[in-house]
Image (cartoon, helix red, strand yellow):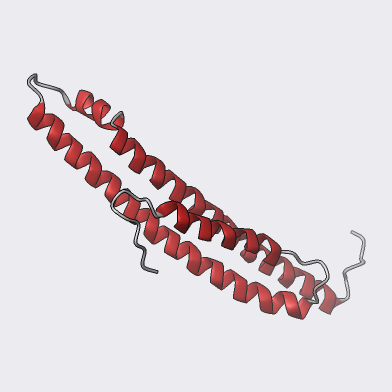
Length: 150
């Protein structure tokens, strides 16, 4: 997926809203009640793959945001190093960078993307877990042991 975030990430909230809407549908797609084993088996594979693809897109976006954060830090570092009349140590420069409003804005945007990525990774894991549960349930049904007490 190709994004156009804008120079100041002004389009990022719109992009994340679309992913949030998709994630909310994911919760509905994970419901098993009222479905047959065949439906669950078919849908689980399809939805799991779909959300894995969306997670990969978000991973790409997150990596891009991390790169932009590093770029911002680098430019700020150069500006502070060249513009300072006093000799500043590494720690002082890093402190100035981390408190700069531009760096904070990019960092917060990166965290928002990371949060959405984590949600989609959790959704993918849930679909995997449903697959494991379905495998176990099917094995029990085939063996006729679903009501056996241990």
